[in-house]
Length: 300
Ligand SMILES: [Zn+2]
Image (cartoon, rainbow, N blue to C red; front, side, top):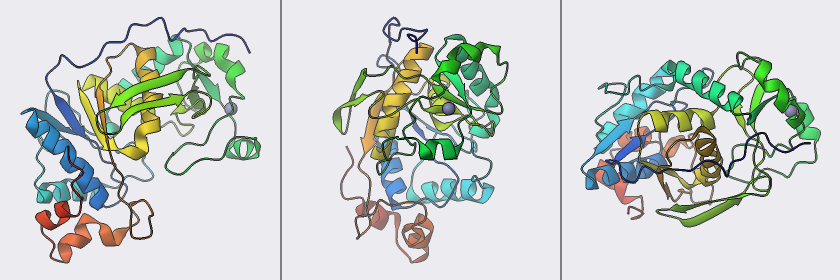
């Protein structure tokens, strides 16, 4: 394989530090929000309040199979019940509308084109079976994407012949061996090595849905987000997103990753923990104060 067509060191990176604070709540309507979400979103709300600035609600409903309108409705209702307020969102509008990812496809397509033209993505038609058979490192807990060994990298040169991303997976070529570092405002200094901690990740899916990494980077920049508050399960994704941000020449926001909540067995809370959903707690007669009391003082 030849050298990458782009040199990631060439681009000067700016930050959002000098801009007025803009935070975001970005839940996916794929289930009911649980107490872990409540704690993270409450932290995001508190940080925006402390800065006397804007909080944006963004509905991350990209996955047409898993996103449900009833869950979108429930998550806004549950967050409002908790006492969280936002100044921009699907319900209240705002200068960067629409605030649902399913309505922002043009932006994502434009972002895909920029990455294609920069020579840092390639089409991959490996099947799930191909990947299962490769000698990739096993996926560790908490990371959503299996390590991809880069077998389609030779198709990098063919990327420019594609006018649209459909029918194949598109992957971002990571600079192997390079360390991505960032200062997380909650978790401290972080570093991840490309090609070791994560491989070439998907930015557009074979079923013609933009991948999470691409959509989040495009939206945070377009909505002028200055600080990203989310769960610590996304720390490694932040390293991936920083590579995308650099390739696109976008400003880098600040990051604040909250601790993940676990159940009594030490299992990370997920949307399948229905008993700990805000809905269930509310039906049991718990108050917003009770719920926030369970967060264990992780705020600030
Ligand atoms: Zn492939």
